[in-house]
Amino acid sequence: MTSIVGAEALEQSYDVVVVGSGGGALTGAALAAAAGLSTVVLERTDWIGGTSAYSGGACWLPGTAVQQRAGLPDSTEGARSYLAAVLEDPDPSKVEAMLTEAPRLVERLEADPLMEFEWIPFAEYYDAPGRVPMGRSIQPSAIRRDQLDAAVTALVRPPVDKDRAGKPGRSTLSGGQALIGRLAAMVARDGGVIATGVQVTGFGRDDDGRADRVLAQGPDGPLEITARRGILIAAGGFEGSPDRRAAHATPGDAAWTMAPHGTNTGEVIDAAAAIGAATDFSGEGWFCPGLAQPDGSGTFTLGFRSGLMVDSNAQRYGNECLPYDRFGRLMAQAPERIPSWYLFDDREGGRLPAIAMPEGDPDEHLAAGTWVKADTLEALGAGTGLDADALRATVERFNGYAATGVDEEFGRGQDEYDTFFASAGSPNKALVPLDQPPFYAARFVLSDLGTKGGLVTDATARVLDVDGAPIPGLYAASNSTASVFGSAYPGPGAPLGAAMTFASLAVQDLSRNQAQSI
Image (cartoon, rainbow, N blue to C red; front, side, top):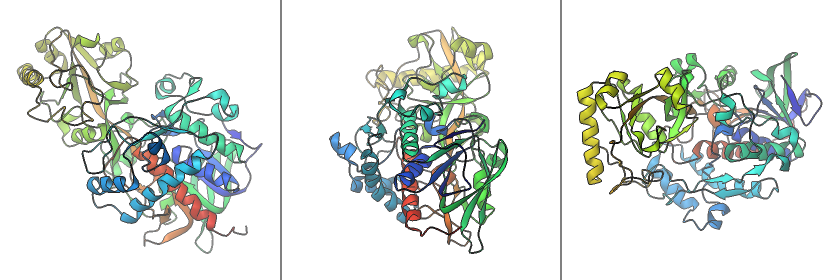
């Protein structure tokens, strides 16, 4: 089904064609429309927002007035030091472009009455110079649907727990939904067009080599839309494609990704490559432990409050309270870790002592075998297929660490992120003994928030060709690109922060281009 907001029908040409409707795509579209450029957003599904709408809406955008208002010791220089310590072999021009643009972008967005940001406490992911205590990430303030254009808010993808259950969204937009709703309302107010149900299938270049056409499939047949100034690709990665994941040796499985079902399958990246764009898939993905669901999917899980994770040999292999991407990368290092089992007891009444989105119904998990419940550790081992003696030894060793407050194997509880969600343990609040039967084991797989390999871009988000030269008129941001962060995940909202800043830089560059005569 095609929905068009801002026009009765699609035109044959626009100044700017934006492919995708996540946080990066809509940031670019909003800025282009505000600059007076005729702008269209093309979204393949019936909903706008993609994985951004599922997210908590955190944006890693350092050095802005939002952090200053909150009294944080944040600065561009501090973020520069932090990234220098965290990233491996980054492109310094792209890192600097992002850091320089972040405060400017937030200032422009907050000047609009439809946008408002606030600081959220959420610990950053590495203990490194420049780290801000309790984090520097910001997010859009929650807003009621009836405060925005109703035609726009009707298209915002519901939260993940609602969407996967086929239920409508809530009356108040918060987190990622607030980001998508606010940006989309800005696009529509300033004359931009948002079209859903339109799948991009290819791109074209003119005789001078400029990318000037978007080929798409609508409900009534093929479409060809001309871009007079530029095309911005911000359509997610290839996490939903089993074949592309296999081709690029990306850990995990398409069934376990957090991308909305049926989306982010990588055709847009391939279509750009077909007209000469260079690609780089070495960044892999934004990983996380995924709670296995009865339907075979996995759901993003973080904030473990108690319990411990073991592999198929009933052995722990890391600090379970690590930031989710870092623990996900540990899972990916050995085949015996996928699946893993998370062991917990009854101190929370049989609920998972963590934040899983969605968790699912415990009774359904138990019936499906994705969770196992037993009165003894020996019986838990039998139910999971884990060696009972090894399981008991691992739990006893862990309980000893909880008693002393020192995790002698993996240092759980020594970092501020470890204790951000924890509160029950003593003397170390991140170490809680497993000693209140019945006992539970929940199956975990390797999930992701998206892949991070794709089109190669420069510091102004121009897509480069295989010889390293910019393809005129073609820009990219978000998970459609090779990430500026490489294989690292610096802090909450890093994917959105990078997507938004490079979309902004793209619009600034294409705005300087002289309009082409079509």
